Image (cartoon, rainbow, N blue to C red; front, side):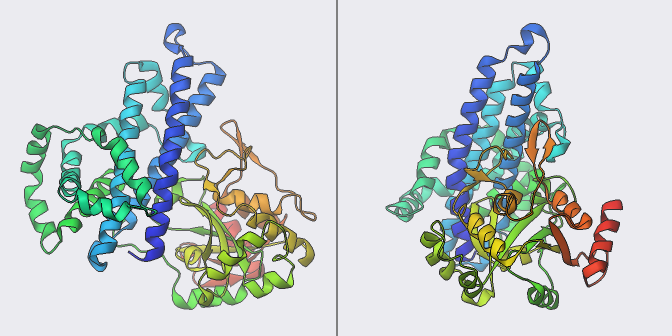
Length: 452
């Protein structure tokens, strides 16, 4: 694991600890208020509130799975990094188990609520049967056995793990573990049954692994076994080919919107459509100075962080991912299988205003609620919306989905196709067409892709 991966994972779990606490409080209030079993149906308000909790839970859950499975090969890292990765993954696993148990405690004795939690929300990529799937995984002895190595490792190495967290950024992870570790109460009988079924597999796969490697592998195996068949393909590492990345980089200009797709990724299910994710390209610091961005009041305190971003990256992006809205290098959006470059239809002076507005949101948390009515948490496309909407002639309409205003990556693509607010500059989408296409050809490929 690289340092930036550990830092991102740490930010994710710290934010998610607070987020799940808030989500559970919201769900408890709704459960206390809703009395559908007395009348046999949900009111419109109750239906919207319950669906909102389901959407938030599902995508937050996927983000934690995505985090855990992103630590693909612990054997490539040193012992210190593996221990830090273990703390991140173990805390994430505890959040998953605690949330699943809370869901059961809230809905298990209320059949009509369970039924509502099993309804799909296709506008937000939520499949049907969420409650049943979550509870099946919670009660699985095999999944409990995967966590056994992690539980045992933490118990046997607790003193040294606490040293890692003492007075450091990892302290909140230990607080999370202390708060939730009692939720891992899978019985010894369950472990024994699962061990008989999985022992041969464990022996084969654990050859050559360190003790901490086995513990981390168990958590990864748990997460992977829950989602791999549907969402992930192990061995696939998304990323633009080097020659494609070089060509795209030469075409970029500050303010470009990068809309990307990773194949076999959980993040494809965060927003509807073929193009689920977006990032805002800022350019390099020299370009930002020329446009007067550095002198903007809310940019000044962030300028040092801009300079800290790898100077060899040839440009920065502002991107909201599971760890929040952060400044990143082009390595982040370029770690995708397909990419579209959209250029805003805006003057250079207005562009400086838009980029400064966008930078004002740096440091905020990711919005798993997909609620564009609030600005303290932002989903990826909301970074684009908050930066550009109302600047110059740009007017970005929000689309109502499941009772809330949203903006998806595909909505941005549609604007590019109609050349409203944005113009397509380049497309690399190997499943649609070979190589990089630019200009009018890029627009034609996007049109064909939307029709397919």
